[in-house]
Length: 282
Image (cartoon, rainbow, N blue to C red; front, side, top):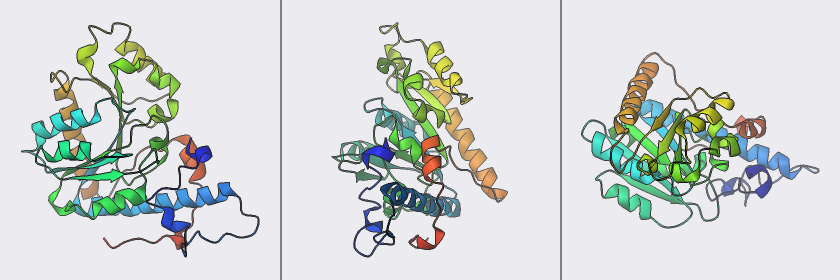
């Protein structure tokens, strides 16, 4: 967990606690927990600024989360093939190392920015903000943020995005929502990916997976699909199209939306320090 392993400090926010950063000097008696609260509060403020970027250019931002190997990049490739003539799409990729996924996305003809986090197991709002300045948001309709593969930490960080999509692949087992509730409580949509494997992995029950999701009091829709065969892709594309249109309608009415942040994230985001944040220009 981020509040105990120390991974809140990343390449994106390290400047806040080093050298002359606003959190570099702490009062006598200040605890490490207080420093983490401050970092997460700064993350929230940066996320709010990122959302201003998106609102200014009417871009819908989707945060894709899953364990490693659940098929996020394959789903993005199939989505780009289906929608790139209708919507302008870009992707921010998060991995510990390599640009492999960004290369796959660029091969589909859309912009992709790779964030390599080193040892950090999640993206944060500062990392995403830096990546946004490598994209032409005015030319985009839809931005996917493919988070680092991890079923815990990414759910506690607001990146400035609008919706959380959580992938659960068939080989992982249908009890992941019960075993990793932090992630699945935050889902606005649960995607059962690699459904082409259901005939040979008959111990996975889509009904049971949804049951575990409902036990978390999460009413999010569930879509079963295969990016490989195309089965179920129309449901996913329909959900995305609806979200884009709903987002534009909200902005037209002066509204916006933000994703659910996991409960542990909310607890640490309680301390707000609006005077300390340093934001780049829109």
